[in-house]
Image (cartoon, one colour):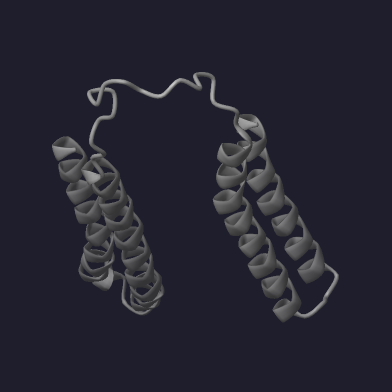
Length: 148
C-alpha cells in the first residue's frame, strides 16, 4: 500500500505534464492545458490526503488487548514537522523570488551590454543581487534544519 501511495501521485503528475505538452504542441488552447494540470493536481491532493485515512481505517489492530500502562503513549511533538515546513517554505519562496528578480534583471543586463560593452560589470551586479536572495533563503533553511 505504501508504494502505491508513492507511485500513484507521480503517475498522475507525469501523465498531466505529458497531456499538457501534447495539447500545446497540437496547437490547442493553453487554457485547456492549464485546466488539465489543475485537475490532475487536485486529484493528487485528494489522493494524497484520503489514501492514508482509508489505509488506517482498514487496518486491523494486531493487539486487541487494552493497554495497561500509560507510559506506552508518548506525547506528540509537532515542532520537527513545523521546522521542516518552515525550511521548505523559506527555500521555495526565496527561490521563486530570486527567479523573478533574475528574470527581470538578466534581459535588461543583456540589452545594456549589447548597447555598451562597458556596462557589463554594472549589470552583472544587479543579476547577482537577485541570485543572492535565493542563496539567503537557502542559508536560512540550513540554519532552521540545524535547530530541528
